[in-house]
Length: 78
Image (cartoon, rainbow, N blue to C red; front, side, top):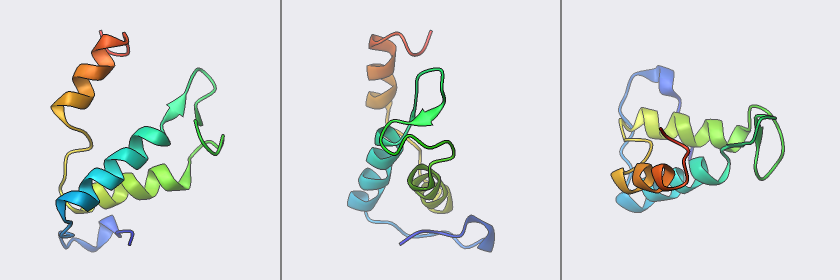
């Protein structure tokens, strides 16, 4: 199930679904300077975009505080 962010209605997602879409965001995030998906190697990855849109339509955070702490460990956030 993917959401249409533009329809204006909030999408109700179970906690498990939110966790799934957050994992998709992480797994399909751009890798390196090339700016391509780490899985499909495409720019503008459809799976990443769908996960982002679905979380946005649900008014859900894109990640948890733990996700940001992990990024700081690896120097991704200064």
